[in-house]
Structures are given as C-alpha cells and as structure tokens.
Length: 247
Image (cartoon, rainbow, N blue to C red; front, side):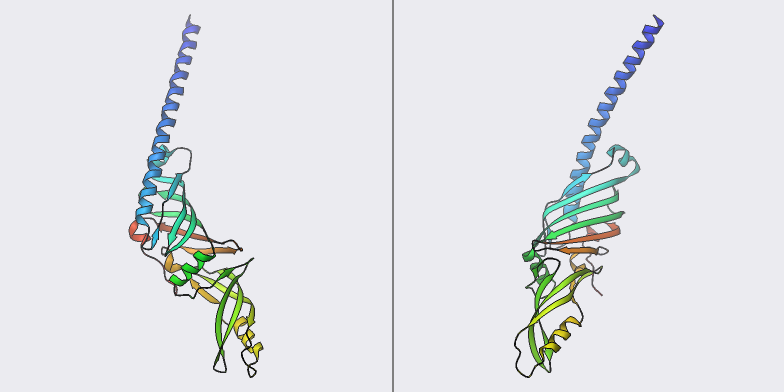
C-alpha cells in the first residue's frame, strides 16, 4: 500500500508539473506576443522624420518571462519590408542583441541589412544633394559626371566600386568613357583626372540615427545591399530622431 501511495504521489506530482509547464508556456507565449506588439508600436513611433513604414518584431530567447525579470531581451529581430526613407522605398532587417525593456537604455549591438533598387538609390541620393543617374551593375555603380580640363567642362560616364566608409559610401572609379570633347583636348587627361581623383561620396549618416555606420555594401544589377552596425544605440524617440553627419 505504501508503494502504491508513493507511486500515486509521483504521478500526481508529474501531472501538476506538466500542467504548470503548460501554463508557463502559454503565459510566456502571451507575454512574448505582448512584448512584440509593444516593440513594434514604440519603434514605429520613434522613427525619425522622413522615415515611415510598418515594423514587425520578434523576441528571441527561450523564455520572455525570464527576460522580463532581468529587464533585457537576449535578441530581437525587426523587419520592415516596405520602409520609406526620404521617399526611397527599401527593405530593412535588424538583428539587435542585448535589448533593454526600457528603451531609454542602450542596446548592446545592432546589425541591420538594407536592400534597395536602382530607383530607390537615386531617390535617396537626390535627397542628400547628390546628382542622380546611378545605375547598378555586377559589383559596380555607374554614374555620369563632368570634369574641367584647361577650363573646358568635359562630360564623362564612369563605373565605380562602392566602398563602405562608416558614415558614408565611397564610389571609387574603375572605368570611364569620355565624349569627343574637341580636337584640342587630350582625352587621356580627362580619364586620368577621373580615375586618379577623389572618389564620389554619398553621405549616408544624414539618413541614419547618429551612431549607425555602414559596415559593408554589395551591388548587383537587381539591388544594392547595405549592412549597417551600431553599438550602444538607444532606440527611444529622442535618440532615433538625431541623425548623423558626415565630417
């Protein structure tokens, strides 16, 4: 009888533990959903001027309840497939690690990926005061420009390799085509002036929260993919409204 009672006790304890686990899982699911909803609304409200779009959030980690207790989410994924920045549509995915529930506190690390097509690239460039007309190729960006030789402006078309440079993207010319330019102009001087001159600079900091830098950029005929990174960024409205500057 004692053995039977002991066995019955273990069975009851097992049932209670299983029921408690189910309750915790359900509660955690509800808390996770509520936390994700809160993040989505707060991040959308904190988007800086000139930036709009819906944000989807996913809170990672095993237990959101446990993360609530310590006041910090292990990992948060944000996705904005139709974000608009200065009139330029783009897709943005963000992976944030060490995210405080109090958004006035800094996030440990943020990595973001932005995808935009040729039209969006030109719209964004024009918003930054850079002449448009960019074309996307296999690892290169094409653009038109002009250079003065002996006081005469000469138009040219160049291809350049994009380079991430923190607060900006540099376009380093690797090829150039020049028009006739007149019989008195040595076109090789035009080519040399373009290829040996300073790279074309596109300031990205002015469209990003202060502290966010361009870490990498890849270009194909379909789109440009830009990877951003930041450490210690605060995701509240006051900080996200402060865009960076190019020195």
